[in-house]
Length: 189
Image (cartoon, rainbow, N blue to C red):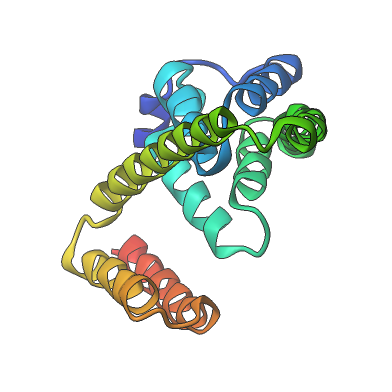
């Protein structure tokens, strides 16, 4: 964490219990793609446990790594705040409640899934998750595209994966090392 990043965070690192409970709450109250947005709002905005720059770096790393983005992000944030035990508690907290909830929802859906009201509720939840994901994407893009090079990489990724529908793995295999090299060179200046 840089001096600027440290200045952006007011609070001392949380206790292991507080970290677990924060991730458990996020796991209990969030759905789908909106989890990264909830983590951002809670850990950067409300609690100020982590800086905006550190969150953006962690989110980029979580998305570049294989696996579920929110699990990767939870591990990264937990480790950044409290080391290995923090990472373990963060991922356990964020997954515990959804695991129980999805089993219960599966049972209920199996019984009542044919009702039209159930589909209306699911459509509303989907819309909210998409809104949170788009909001986080917009904020991240604005902060990540600080110069022409960053903006070019962002647009190249969007164009190749989002518009041209190229497979993500080859695009990531080329653009991630390029962006890391450029970031490293920028850090040397």
